[in-house]
Length: 314
Image (cartoon, rainbow, N blue to C red):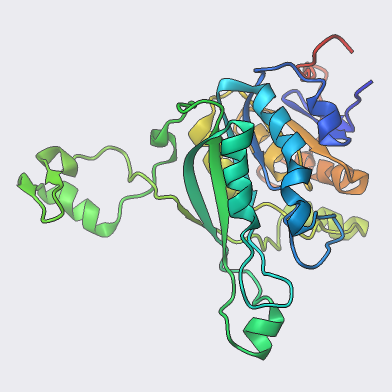
């Protein structure tokens, strides 16, 4: 029987191998799978990570299940960091090989690549960046947006950004139709106020939160902080972009469950799966504070618990 460690009216968190849980889920039942699995880093981390040469073999069963449980309109958003070749100042190609495998062998479609710039990243690897100084620090990670079909649900009007000062001046002044040297036809409608600018595929945010209620509660309880937490801005962007309220968001490598917490705050149903029980139990602290920082109970009598879409009743 699959039992949740904790839950809310919108989601549940399971301590298990995510393959075990996903294999029990109905096909075509999830709207978005958004995750950051352990990277194939040269050095082993306490949360576990597969070796570069074995990474595709290790990840393939997870990818196959993700494809099966996604709705035809669903998306798979995968954050995967690059790494270095052991003993050499050259980059590994494992994440590119993984992308090709996901599309050529598993059956996903690449909708778009995104680039996450983390300005808070430490200079690494120390040997090449700090000691020999023959490389610069690696501050960008790949995020692959993949679809079960070529046309997953998406709406960029939900992730508009504030206009630049130059664009605000154009909107106020207006423009004359023209053709640029690049060949683009610029019409008068280009200067209409459409509520914001369409974002690019470059996302800048750090993962160095230091003053959240969640971290304060962990420190007060003497708990260990997860060493590779997702910054909330990433799941917030993709959940808004690719899902509607009430849709199901799954993170099969949930860690400290940032994805579930953000999904809850945006009115989406969520499923979090994490094999490390300590990380998962500690992540419950995220849900015990209101937006104003006040401690609140996780459940109320009026709530109906979220039901995992299983093959059969459990």
